[in-house]
Length: 112
Image (cartoon, rainbow, N blue to C red):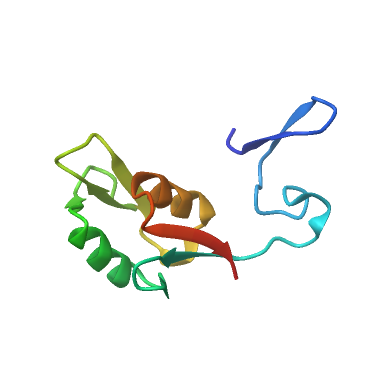
């Protein structure tokens, strides 16, 4: 069972299996598409080719683990690993925020 735990104002929590659904977005309506922005250049990351170039310049190297469905990066100077789906169309905000956390002050996730 996979999903996201949603905490309501009354203290009750509920597992939402489709976090991109309208319910997960609350009463704001339909979910908004998120984009990953590379802050130094101001450009939106629109492909893995562009992201690969940025991450390599930051010292990240491709990691060839065992899962052929993942595109992964690691740094020798840390234990961090960035795992992304091979299909860029599945590159969601969860993966974007992982990149933001592991590269502070260099990326930002914003609504499109």
